[in-house]
Structure formats: structure tokens, C-alpha cells
Length: 347
Image (cartoon, rainbow, N blue to C red; front, side):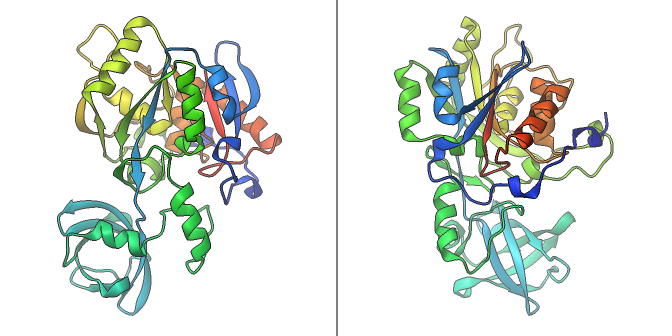
């Protein structure tokens, strides 16, 4: 299977640059896999497509303002703080990276200085700081780590404040992501109440979105690609809720591809019945057509980039031809794409 098979045409003007005024005003394309039917709806109608006692699984990871500009060898560098390795050591992604070499110093806002310890592939570096209070500092000076297709000027403080609120789900709790689990951005507290009023059960897991989620595919054949590892955590309570639903034949609805990868990674391979194991682990699970889903029955997701691992996961769940047909219709109907865009519910 070739990566090129997951390409599609997208006019640039359909890439959403800002969120809608109301989170739940997004359009929602509904795909019925059994009948190959496509329905055009709105996210606020989500409860109408689910049944009482269905289990909706959210990713409660919180995005940190991980993007900061610093000076290295007299040049301004764009840094993305990827993850904390040790109390004072962070893995970062920098652009341009040519001058950011081991032994050099980097000066950041508020006079903070770091030392480059190691050089990694594709712009990755290991930095050491004089303090272990980096999260507090990031909230003072950092910008939301928006993907490059959302255009922002560094000096635009108004949009920074907007993005700090809107590039975050209303149920985010645990800090650690460098990109939003975007399917969750559509939820409002009012819609969550409506789901509960319909006796739909909500629970959450945690997968901190890292480089693996949006790393580009640089090979021609799909099965030659290797995912980077990301941490996930499932509480005993969440696993019990999900396992009970599977045992009783109720639908497990994954909100986003990160939840899909978390639940499928946690599937108990030793059990004859579909069930997940609680705990904290890493995963590099790569889901593409041919994968047999064990836990997830429904999927809510945004529209994804051409030739991306996320699009391949969606194609594995609903069928490549059907998904590409739906994407073509979304383009024709003027849907808004990617992180701040509209969503798709696959039944």
C-alpha cells in the first residue's frame, strides 16, 4: 500500500485559520459505514446520533504553550518544547537548527539561558536550564503550539490570547501535549450536559500528544513508516467503564485519533473478550487499513492532512475509498479543514 493513495485535493482557503465564535457551531459530517450514507449535520446535534449508555471517551491532556523564540549565535530560532526529560532538561524542536549545536547557549525571554547538550535528528535538541520551573515560565512567555498551516504573526498578542483559550478543550486537565486533541475542541459544557441528560456516559483517558501524532511520513510504502512513542494513561475507573460497555455490547465512542490509539494500544491481547488494561505505558501503534479494531466502535474526528498517519487511521476505521469519497464531498460542500475546522462522526 502506497502513501500516495491517501492524497486528496484541498483548496488552501478551506484550511481554517481561526475557530468559530461558538465551539459547537462546527459542521459535522456523519458517515454510516454499513450503508455508506453521508449525512450533513452540526456538532451540536451529536447527542441525536448516539444512544443512551453509549460510552464517550475523551482525551483530557492539556496543551502547554510550548512555542518560544530564542537567540542562538545571534540568530532568532523558533523552539517547540516537546517534553521534559529530567527536572532541568527538555527535548526541543528548533527551526532553523543549523546553528543550535552542542555547547552553545540559547537566550530566551525574561533572561532565561539554556545550554545545548545534545543534537538529535530532524531539528531535535536536548537543552539544560538553570531551573526546573519551566512550565510556569512557558505560561508567561510561550505561544500555543499551532500547526504551521495556521498562520500567525509573533507580535499578534490578541490572537495569542484567543489561541490560549480555543486551542484547548474545555475538559483538559493534565498538562503535557504539544498539540491539541482537536476532535475535543468542539465540546462545550452545555453539550456535555446534554449528553449526560440522554444517559450517555463520559469518561476520559490521557495521551500526551507529541511528535508522533504529526510526524510526516517520509517513505513511499505505508508499512515502512515507524511511529515515535507517546505516553498514555488509563485509570482503573475508566477501564472498568469501557470494559463493562464492551461486555454488554454498548458502543465505545472515541473522541479523536489519540483516544483510538490509546484504547487499541491498551487492548488485552491475552483475553478472549474485548477489554482494555489500565496503567501508564508508551505506544507507537500505527493504525492503517488492514488493522482489526478491538475496542473502538464509533469515532469522532476532525478532517486530516493528505498522506498523514491520522488520515490512514480514519481510512482503517471506515474504509479508504469511503473516506476519500467523503473528503471529496467535504471539499465540494466547503467544510473547514484541520485543527480549527469541522468534524466527522463515523458510525
